[in-house]
Length: 187
Image (tube, rainbow, N blue to C red; front, side, top):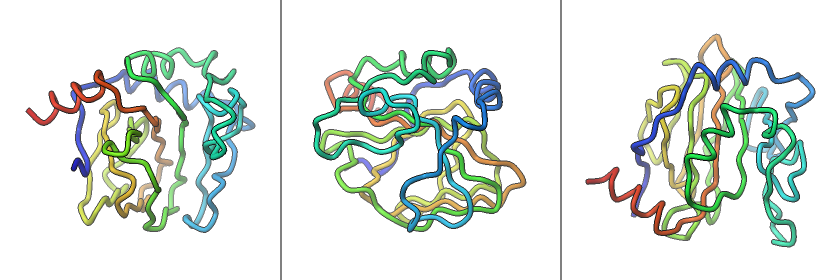
């Protein structure tokens, strides 16, 4: 079982940051899971059910397939990240945890490699004072890196930094291409 894994992909952190900093304030919507955080946690949908801007969560009914949003169409650096994946993509979101905010320890059901849906994080803006705990370990993720986390395991984030933390979070369907990428990362 994979718990977490740094994947052999890197992305243009400066271009991603510039794109995030240029996002209009109205593009950011509050995270829907208010019981799991303290402070301010919001996001921008890049892929969402029916391609709806502002929709940060999956369609649990399965009736609305994920598609690119209008925001993604105007975001070439984010588009370049998503285009790097040959595996099918589900949700893709920019998630921002404001300075001084925290995400309480929680788990996300059915979000692990072994169950067919992998949650990937590409840090865009971060700081050493951002503490990302996953299954009892602190993960140090640098801008532009790509990390898998088994979201079925307990995880939390404390943003003790003076800057907002932003990650591009992508849910990817496990297929032979992604399996080979994970095997390369563990070799």
